[in-house]
Image (cartoon, rainbow over all chains, first blue to last red; front, side):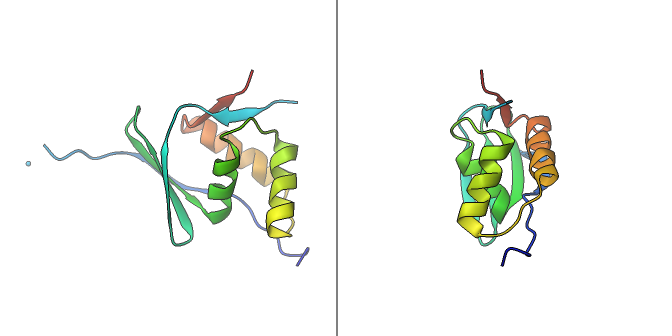
Length: 21
Length: 86
């Protein structure tokens, strides 16, 4: 199991889309 | 050793193997993978790269390269989610 390499990732980052429309 | 900690209070939700982090101040949504979510939960307290690496090793029993932890923390910092703990 020690040979398994894992990494933390940021998948996406975006502003919240507000619905006024 | 530089320590990092979450900037503000955020809403984080786990959906399957992803975490959604909602920044209620900046109105942003950030998605991280499962391991990223684990690191995020640890960052409610001050953490160094080494302490995170150790926590990952203990939790997952798998190797996590230091560079990838540094990259992840840099990305979170760019997203405005963490800051240096003083």
